[in-house]
Length: 139
Image 1: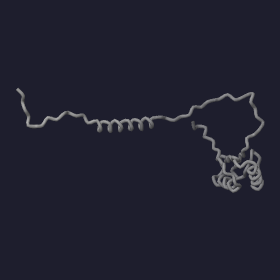
Image 2: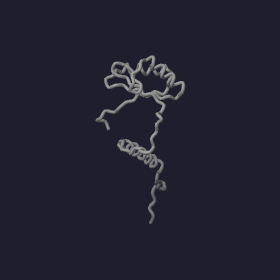
Image 3: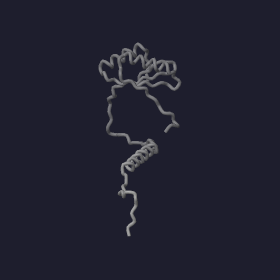
Image 4: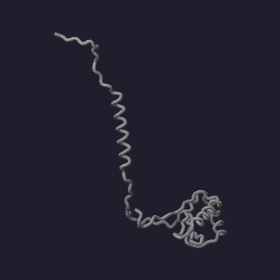
């Protein structure tokens, strides 16, 4: 004997679209969390130096050092600002991509380093870098 129900018979159906949405959300969440768990550290390496390949040519760059009084030294030789201007314009006329590295003494004021930076920019040099040295306790 078959029992009949007043409700119409419907086929059972599994809705996949909400399941796919949930899976994409979980995938994106796990990806974002795994990216945050990575600790970026550098490895210190002592690489061997070349013994046979020696070069007598120096790279074309200018190292400027600013002491605590605001005086400038080029390659550890003190120079005046007038001599520095002629040196920079002469070297810049030979090489338009001349890089200049500015290093300040530990007790040099920020203003004196920025004044030298401004002086170098007025000479027309575009490739300028401020050389910094990490503290010994930094990794």
